[in-house]
Image (cartoon, rainbow, N blue to C red; front, side, top):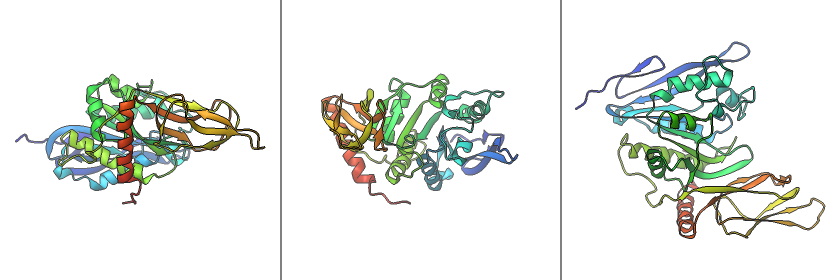
Length: 342
């Protein structure tokens, strides 16, 4: 049997089969109070991958934080192969201010790999990259929709990367969406450094969605089983991974109130009326029509819109895939929509 050595991260050593809470100095408030990046490290008793699970790179995206909390409660280092690093809150300053952004309005997820001497976001990205990303062999990045927008639980991944795609399939979200990396994002950095990464999107900013959280915990554990870090059968075996190569946003062509006729996860057909734009003064309604066949994976929760505003995000599928995707959403609804908090 291979003898395990200590795992080193952020200047600390973690013995095999143990868990350690680590604080990493990250920033300071205006009153000189320190802000520490807090991480939980589970170093297994047997060799294996190093999985980094992180949330709240956008500070108002809360579902991933609770996924991390539950994951920490359920993980036993003595039964683990490899190492699990959990960072519930990456964007500390955004989280404190309940904002997606840093105080200077920069998006931390456009600052990677960062710089030791750059602006605040660049420095935080550099710290995270050098201390944690470089240690990882695999990464799961947890997100939600933006403020006033809800996302159906989905995995976003570059499906042309085989290792990342296999992680996405193992996670077993209702939809896998092909998405190339954006410059400055954690996904872009991981791709550059050859680290497989999947991004989980679910729910709405500044809100807890219990179904999205429970599915996220199960999904991370499924990936751990796929990587042979944990034992047991993967959950949601009935889900057949279905990949959408494209998605499109339906936009309002008129100013007015939006009367929605479809819901998150619903199938739509090209030409179908999905909503209407109406005047507050009772004028005729202007229909909003689906431009493609697919499934609603994101929508705006604000019932007013100006011309050109994005309202519905539709993942596109062909006829055969559409039926499989509908089955996945039905299975997801059966298992998670009535989930109560743990």
